[in-house]
Amino acid sequence: MKSDNVLIIYFIPLALLISMGLGIGPIVHKHLLHRWKIHPDTIIIMSWIIASILLLPYTIYRWKQIRVDYVKFTKPIVIFVAFTSVLFGLLSFLLYLNLITHNNISTISALIYCSPIFTLLLAYLFMNEIISYKEIIGLLLIIAGIIIIVNHPKKNY
Image 1 (cartoon, one colour):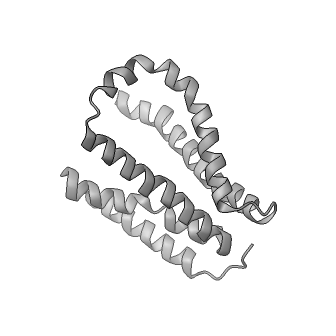
Image 2 (cartoon, helix red, strand yellow):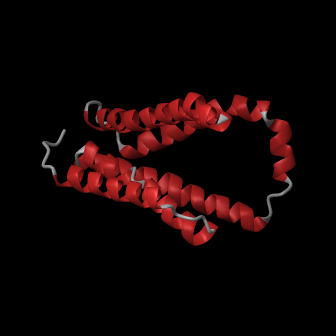
Image 3 (cartoon, one colour):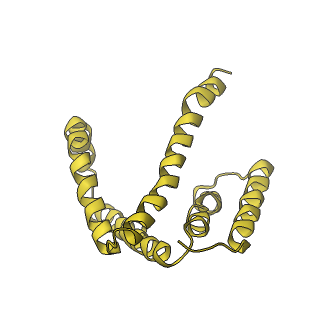
């Protein structure tokens, strides 16, 4: 019962705060692209520079743990991290910015934030996690919601 209280008091509000931040991002990005006519590449570069600067104090704070983990980085791990960073970070962000430049952000957001569908299926396939009937119902509701949002005609920005 104690873990249920922790979930309600701590994790759910934190997850909702993260979700709100992810929901604000497309609005800010579309505003930068259209109102100030900033090129998607500039947004990507500035985002990564700012993120790097902001991560520096945290890196210094966590340096002992980073040093311990750093020695575990073999060549295959470095290649894997680099590949996933480029493919799922940089390339995804570039494609996302190009999509919201020319499309309705609520539609694009519904499509790109449907990650629970892929996470659940990939966790089942590669991590041997069990999918409950509640999760299947949840996935079907997510898919139904995405279909409704995508098929609803909207005026572009």
